[in-house]
Length: 392
Image (cartoon, rainbow, N blue to C red; front, side, top):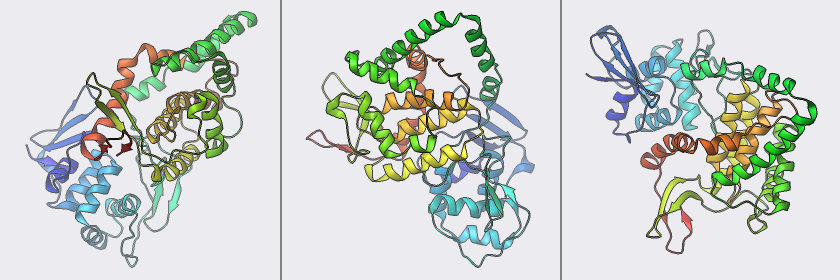
């Protein structure tokens, strides 16, 4: 069956293959198949066939395949501005022609012909029925688009409203937590809470296969967990504040005064002493802008369900990997902080986030691998220096 949308464009421009959230094909009937890895395959009858050419399949992708910012950037770089400008000139008030203009400039950082005349009612950049969107959208007057993305072009997570996500968020978890608190006498609850703080500290080191740290460092990590939700989120995400917390929780040998200025990777040593690289982190020159983008996500994701915001922020942090050491522990602290900050967890209540991850390490690793493997296979090129340095 002929490919449609993103799948057609990847083949047309011979782009690296990558997992797609939606793979569309032209067939004889409308049929949807959901894969175990979360991907969806959809067959469309003949009346859905788009106009021949790049723009026809781009508009089909925006309409039916969803928004894939990295893939759109690669397609726009491959085709250049000419077909996009021609489509806008032909339909200056069209919803999808204007969205093409908006996403072209958003993903490439290049401005299209300023003489293009745009009209029509404002449209949303993301469909709120399909994605979690910002509750504080920005008005893009050039394209007459409500920019309701969760970030900017420095860092912008995309979170789909899948059936499993929607069902999970519908569970009365917050009420159940409060019920547990109400059911226990205060003194018993306090003892249980103290135990959980210590268990969380042990578990967060267990995730990274580290021995239990000295007592003073354990106390510092417990104190850090107890501080979750204090101050403002924008202050917490500044370099000085994150550096201060990194210095508290790592071995003093690995305490640093700034974000990393060297290349880094996540890997493991094989029996022959070679390295298996799971993930090559962004080069150090990108870290400041990525962290500034993460701060923007914090502002634009206000009002989202606390679990969604915590996942977006914490996953973003661990993949930026702003420090040489301590990123995983700070990632889990951020989860605690955001759940307390948004009132999902009452003051004094400790959720065993790290302990739960440790019990489900294969599933946790699979989630990270599902994201990082396409990056490693399709977009990154790196070598390890003979001296052992990191040179992604």
